[in-house]
Length: 92
Image 1 (cartoon, helix red, strand yellow):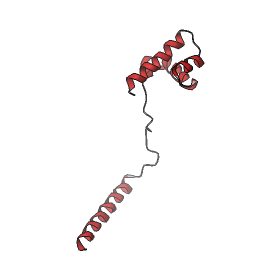
Image 2: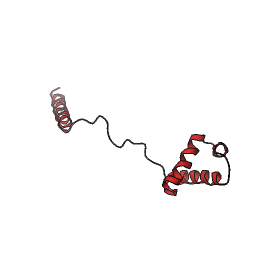
Image 3: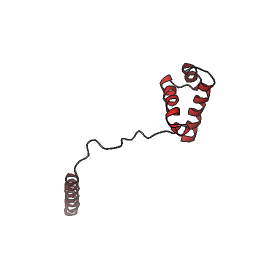
Image 4: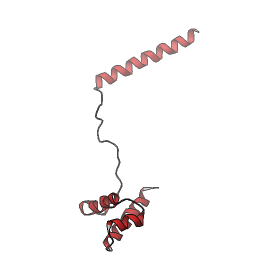
């Protein structure tokens, strides 16, 4: 399902809430859990209708990124090992 579909579903949840239905009822109508409904209800006043867009779950940074000099050493070693393996294949 694409982003447009999910924005429509989230917008529908907000409209149903504004019509006076409870969070529990909206969750039942849309077949989602109540936490999901609360999430979008909270986001609307904070960010407006643009807040109903989905967000990436990708981390903003890598927690265990290796230092540049270590990454470079790994690349060089890997290249040497691959070159050695390739030259060994030619000898058999």
